Length: 617
Image (tube, rainbow, N blue to C red; front, side, top):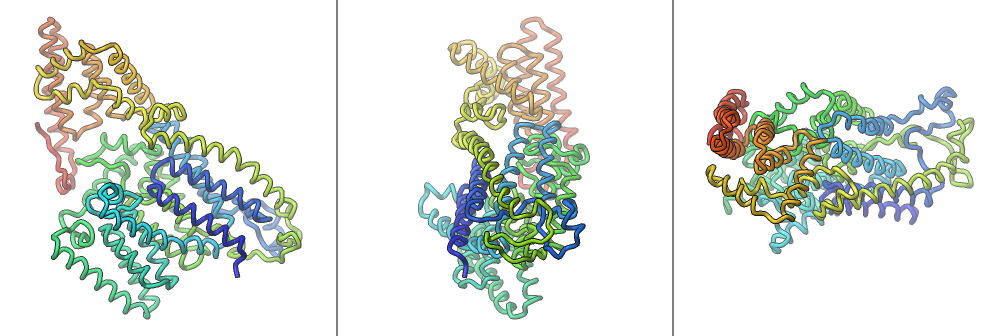
């Protein structure tokens, strides 16, 4: 029977997992920092509740192991945890060449929080990790229940539903479906009540996630191959899902959630979009084999894409890792994951869950959610003592007796390790609390305070620039023709002093953004408009050319630039500046030529997407 103290430990781990899932699944930085902070708190609590802490990088061995193994630190290096942590620790180096160094360091902070969670999970044995995971179906029921209830309260519908599909706290249907599917796998394998499995399956159908349903079907086929007793249940479940989809479509004509599986392979499928993302991403990797840094893909992607789309992630976590960290770290990490799958000593359930997550990551960005990474860490082989043949009886202090062990493995060293954990966790927790404050302000849209805590935070600077700036909006809202541009100039000339200062501040923010992110198109665009409005036509045309080179498929930007060039040409002609006038007219002609050249290089897949390329206005 489990000790009550151990039960409380499991409750704490489950509570942390529940909190992160409810906070948008850990997608935003503030929730990842909170997870890191609470993971450190768990380690601290464990150091007081247990008399021995498992080392993270050095694996304990039995007293009967060869002396060379017991005495050598390298031979006892725990690659289960040391290898991924080593990759994480070298990731700050990438900030030297990252597209955006401040945003890359945010990614590094997320990985630091993952190390904290890995350290906390390293203190659990396999049975305890399984107990924590057994709570996933319960969380899944909460996600499904709150999602269904939200349909009756319009204030919550937009929060938990996207495009008529259940997204839950994740606000993304596919990842919500993955979480519910993991709960379903656990429910079936642990033979929980069938009503729980049925409710989770209903939630998955409401997400309309085709990829997760296909994975579940394949998992069911594999399970039936090894356990023929499950064939009947699998066939009945599959028939019920098919019947539900067909009935829902027949009654409502809606293909967005329950019946969305029926669109698999149709022209509405997002498969073509994924293929185009991948092709463009491989071209980027060919040019940037050492990685773009975290969030670099999002900003550089418009300059290299060969179709009309906007995506923050490439919808393949392995490819995303290569884009973020470089090809070599990605290959090493994938090799390590394969080792976990084929050589890991975790239980069958944990390995099934891990394989399910890794398979789902091929077509989506699930691991951008911290809660999914938390589940994956729980399913890893951490080099557990039981799995690696540790033996020995407990002494009066509750520590395992060891004979002829090195100094770092003695009972005294184990006690000193407890003290070291307690001392180390305090400053680390303070660090996580600091960044939690910064990113909480970011989530609350208090950008000034965000920049006070985290200077040069690109998203905050761009949002603040948009809030206090007006130059770009003045022109884009006027639209139409050069006369409207002249109206905007007249309005600017009549501004109050406070508005003018605000414009200078916004331009300063845009300049700062470009100092660490040359591909931030909105900042380039703002400086171009600001230069135009103060009469610096040379700078305006230079910055707008730069903006067009990034936003290649945004025809509306070509049109706005064409209007600006018309205004520059007329103003310059009126003032007798023939060089500037001629330069503006030449650039107008080049705009259409650039679009025609872009047409020739556009990938044929681009015409199979919902948003098709347009090359004229």
